Image (cartoon, rainbow, N blue to C red; front, top):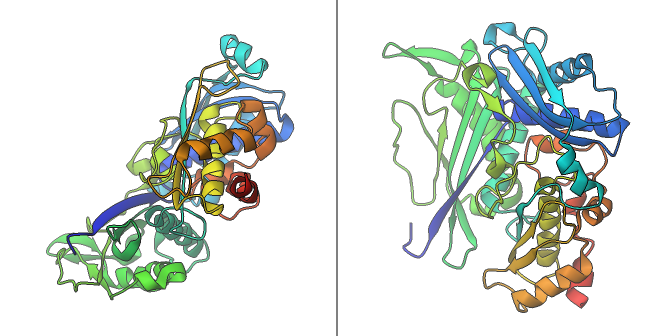
Length: 412
């Protein structure tokens, strides 16, 4: 690698990853509440482990959210993800479901009822011009790998794959911040016994299965949008030879580098709502305020204001005011107007960052009520945000991905 280039890495996790199972359960409960009562106040947390799902939190709603309904919602999510076999330690029909839900604190409700923020804190949004969706390239590719992993698994095109999987993509950047090439890919997928062989007295994932994953999943995703950044061949690192000879432009690919991934999902690792907040956002490229999204209704600015910040940042870049933009807002609990608004274009802005911030305050509603109304956030749209990333996906329900304010920002 040239001395004036650098590497940046982001990871994503599949819908079957334990933490993502928990996120999807929490957002399924939220969607149920919003379907029956759009004014529901929901802060739902989920824990999943071997043969157990625990749903807890503070929920105030007119929705018929009985214990039986929670039980059904949990099992429906687990079933849809693909955990069906009790033999692997976590399955829709056999796991125990424990419901521990109570109503929201009246002291929090006091401030929210008058239109104030549901908590203090700061939220960030980010956008850049590296991809059509204005997302950083490493997290965009990492998300697409696990989304396509799930698609192929559900279609039966990866018959050995089980729901739990993780991806990681490293991109080599030029000194000016533009992507030069895709450098390394890491993919780990839970699997069944059909792709296990024995070498040197140990059970290992077969090289044949690795080649199938490259052919059907990794290579097509890498070449779909940025074939220009695939400058060499894909070189697979196996467990027997983890550091193969790699050409200057080749892509090193680690697939199940531990050698075997039979035990996975909630049986292999306890899952918790909100533990993948960097995966949910920008893969570490943009900053994060620390608050999780899943299981929270839009009065919680951890979620709604982070969506608004993404919307603002994306419109700034789409307007041509910057090649990349990070937006920060902060709130005091019970207070409607943000305490601060900051725009940082990292030296790529066509006008001063302070001028862009002035335009932001003029063109975007930043009170919790204004955000909820403008982005239409009282709809039951959240479960599908809980796997594959909350940003950069061309879904019409993801209103924060619109660039409908770009022209006004540019003209102002």
